[in-house]
Image (cartoon, rainbow, N blue to C red; front, side, top):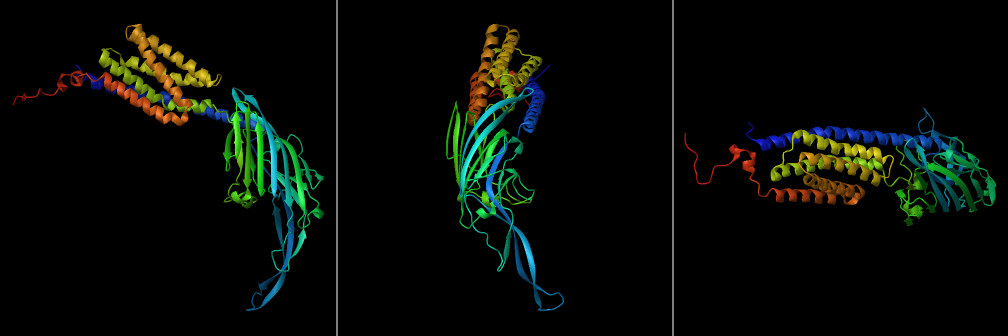
Length: 452
């Protein structure tokens, strides 16, 4: 005969909850696998279309050679020196005074299997101005031999260029091609050296169309940078080192304007640095991510899975004490298994339906199954529907937590407090000593235990 039925039941329920944590962890593994598959699908589309784009430049790039006399010591003769002729190859990088870009962006959904991927095509019109500063020798008496000046610009993935950029500098049309291997940017236009007079003002006009996937950004290399982007995409995600100075976001799309002066950016100093320790160049960007990431939401839901099983089992256990219900451990296990399968059902449905509809169908199916099952376990529709109503409230709270990430902690804390309060109120009149067994009851006050 079991002398401590309450303790035994508690230990058995705890074991069942630990057992149900295993399939719950397997569901999380499935979510991670599907997330990786979605990432692979995005990469496949990016390889065929074009990847995320970052627009850099344009900048003026002038290679030159400086020849000068250097004094060196004569080996083997103390105090003796001689002069030798030395040539050093250098590059003068000159950034624009102003760059003003007007851009538009249109999105399209491509599918790779069941995974949707957002791609875009964009149009860019840039005006700017260079003021040429004469290159000065670094050594006294140095002589300069200027090379071929280039106007450099870059995009992260040149496959996204839908046509050759149209470029005019100081009123002269310049063809754009691939840059030499020594330059830090992939696209270049040859500039007439005769135009580079000291103090010369070189106005720039640049237009091009660019395709990409997922994100587009700019590196602010001018002294005064201004970028305005318009798009019908209603869910932009602004990132990078600078947020837009002005933005408007609505159901019909968004418009954002960035203004970044060189005084607030390190991009000019970081440009052209090489090596493993070179810092990443500052930039600003906008992402076109899906605002409802079903894998992220489902993964968040599973984090509350064990807590929901604990709350449900706690409710059943308390009602066993209060209502004198008899629920077998095997019935606890089947109820918990149904709650675990809810998350797998939610994942599979959300890959084909909007998340809110997937959640509604999965939760309705799980609640209907449990209400029907509990009707037979508890001996009537009243008890079954009552427990079904509790599950409706529980899944409703979970959905509120998922769609309101900023308030998740508050809602979860209020839920736990409410459940604890309900349990304490429901069990306030229970004689736990009597429930735990006759041997657990303390001696009656005023009576002494018999001496041996």
